[in-house]
Amino acid sequence: MGSLPRTVQDLASKGEEIPEKFIHKDGDGGAPNAPIMDVPVVDIALLGSSTEELDKLRSALNTWGCFQAINHGMSPEFLNQVRGITKEFFHLPFEEKQLYLREENDIEGYGNDMVLWEQQKLDWTDRLYLAIYPEDQRKLRFWPEKPEAFRSTLHEYSLKLKSIGVVVLKAMARSLSLEENCFVDQYGERSKLHARFNFYPKCPRPDLVLGTKPHADGTGITLLLQDESVEGLQFMKADKWYRAPIIPEALLINVGDQAEISSNGMFKSPVHRVVTNAERERISLAVFYVPDPENDIEPFEELINESRPRLYRKVKNYVDIYFQYYQKGRRPMEAAKIEV
Ligand SMILES: O=C(O)CCC(=O)C(=O)O
Ligand SMILES: [Fe+2]
Image 1 (tube, protein in one colour):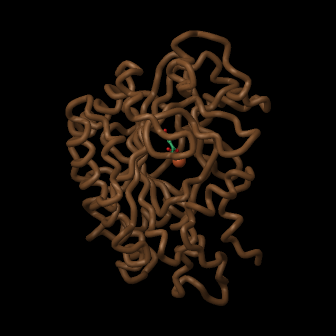
Image 2: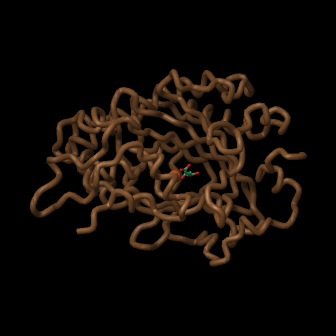
């Protein structure tokens, strides 16, 4: 392949020895037998009317930092169509996919894990990363024209996710007895929606190799469509790993660092990772809902009081800070946390 980057898919298909930079020496690659999470299932259609559902949402985001969203207005068939375009894209021949290759130092487009710091372990995954909103930031040259339904399906999916995101952010506010637009207003009209299609090829050594390293998302919130039948995602709670269950018709929605900051820690941005699988490949589609980088993100005044001091500093363009810290191998939230 000359100087073209080596995708994990290509590596995996050749059955060669796994390169050193994918190997986690501390051994805790797999933990396939981690216990399953008892993560709450929240009915999105009830969030406007049921205090019980709002309480469930608040408690889920305060403990696990995530919940399974059902009744979100998208049919199981449509979700399978979204999974379908994802699988079809990654199964195109490399000659087709390379049209959308990302630049070496840019995140947008198709390619392997980005190397951000020297000793970084590589994730056993290939990705397609696309900016979706604001619409004037779309770079259509990275939007696949094959499979044929790709662009229109992604467009339709994004419209739905944007409105689900707003419903969830409003419900999050009400669940904390705040004015319902406080998150939406803080994030601004030019808040972003970015999509990351993840493809995890089969891996011969799930005990040593991770699909995605442990991380928390730098978002406001993340809306994840999981593979309909292959598990892999795990969340950490009290220093232990738990397997995320699959509900094929649900979206798994998690808090990102920025919603943890605005909520003054009432909502938790959970550390999560993806394990690899020797028998089956896996896909997922993460959609990141991110505040306008021009906007200040800081804890809502109403959530600061004598018994609950302010826990985070004001941040701006947190995604930039996120990558700077990540490069040094540090948890980005350190930049915002106030020691009390
Ligand atoms: O593949 C998954 O289930 C999760 C991926 C993820 O955590 C991410 O893209 O940020
Ligand atoms: Fe993530």
